[in-house]
Image 1 (tube, rainbow, N blue to C red):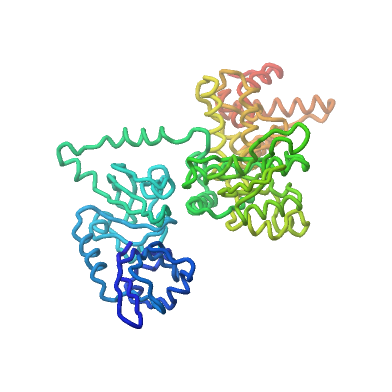
Image 2 (image 1 turned 90 degrees about the horizontal axis):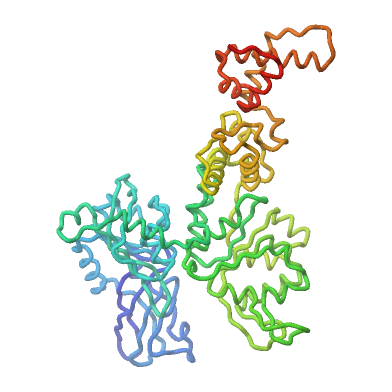
Length: 551
């Protein structure tokens, strides 16, 4: 933020007015922009019928708060090179002991004072034009600036823990305020104090752990956040990083991903992270809506619109001020897509059977589980409708592309089931994890979750380590790399008689494999079972059935 002079040049005299200039572009604060000549006439910008005593006007990416003393004709706008107020502003914040940072409304860094540079050990020129999430490794609910931008309310005495770009670990107490003009947020300013210094001052201590716990408890429980997305893989980290950035805007979003990849989880997290988080999130599976009910579902109905109809809100009214999530949006028939397009463009609609126009402010997040280019070619999605709802595209990766996440996800699902049903903590054995890693998971994360739940229900209640024979049949037939290698080594020493039936010979092979494995592991049932890819109980049953002597 900078205070500058507005020079209105007229045929009679110069009139100098103060204005507030907040730049929306990344480089607006650079010195060279102060002397930039704004080559537009006041009359051209405001128009002869739109002149007010005061207001805000946008010219070439800058916002000017102006106030008229008298109407001037033919005035040109300049930014003064030797601006006294700007210099006073810069000199003032240089002497403030607290760190000060200023961000635009989308979270891009604009300016900081020397105290902030010293505290975090950075150079201001390296920060300019970069996004907050590119500068700091932050959890969203503990970021003061992001909280202010999405809630549009001040945050006082908040504790932030983070690492600076230089790698320095910091704990600061922050006060942040939204920069608002005419009820519109243009950015945020944050004042930061080093907690280690504050602790040296009496009566200025803060219980940061208690504060963080309290802030965490205030999170809405019914919607997912980015912290709920279990991931370690690089591709998923990139997806979440990008989703956090776009959540701070109101741009429409198209989420592409196969069935079971977690598209609604991403959509809810975007809503929870953005400034609409305290408004409604309405999710609907478009494929479940009968075609003849599309209009009444989206726009609502007035009483008497048709036989038995009552006054009822539609999805747009229910989601007003918040987010409308359209899953499987390609299921909407083209005729209805055209009607939705008009609502999205004009931001108003009428209920079915009504005559009154209703204004709406809704962010659209859509999702498809097919390739959008093919959907357009097949004319399942209108081009104009697609371009309207896909300003930003987010691609959710397949689970098979997230190999690093599979074991962690499986354990997460198992932990949740154990906690829900008051079971002791359990794990999967190495062979089962190997099976998970080799499988392609056509149903993605949802299929993995169902497999874990299947194993949980089919294993004995006191199971502490789940094995392959607890899994669904189609996974029991798979063999892990470890199991195939060990079985091949053991089988090299097996001698099978040349007489007897097929079943008798197979039983002889099975008995020899088990005997060799038990001998290799010193008769240890648990270790032998792991090597053979079966449960301990299953191996004990086979030892008894085949009359195997185990010392």
